[in-house]
Image (cartoon, rainbow, N blue to C red; front, side, top):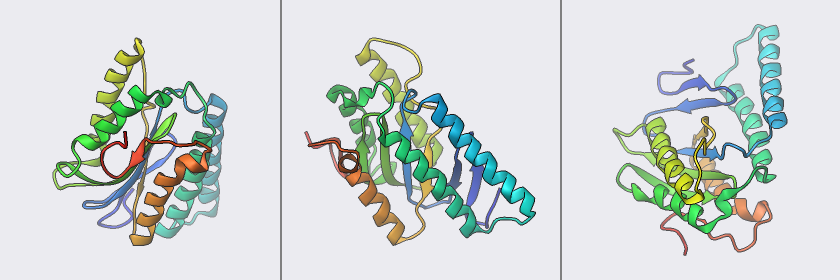
Length: 205
């Protein structure tokens, strides 16, 4: 669905995805086991409820209402991630370093990286893709490479990342500052002490 000539929205299985050429994004992607089935079912039920309410009202949502609705979903999603469900293999320094280095690798080449954080079961990145490099392609590159290498480190095979990512289109300077602050403060807010896998440059080893 198109909101205007610049912003495009597509609905994923659980979350909406907003894109606009030249924009900055706050992206979160998570490990495959990071949310219990009950939590996923709850997110889907809440999404269906909001959709039914909109249908019953027979009124098309404005861009502002869509943003507010997406924000409610994302807040619930991020809170569940911070609860620390799953095996949390990103607590391992070798796996966290692998992911952090992947984020850094094409900084200033394919995108401008503003902030990043590798949490125990998910990753936050605030960045702006450069012309010629699309958001889905960058996410696929990060997740595909790190999944293969992390499974080698862990001595196993199988799904590493959840297929769908959460991506928030940063709308203005205030929104950008909020995304960066959230990313850099996430370990503290989640109760992690002396967490080193975050920053806006190379990993702080």
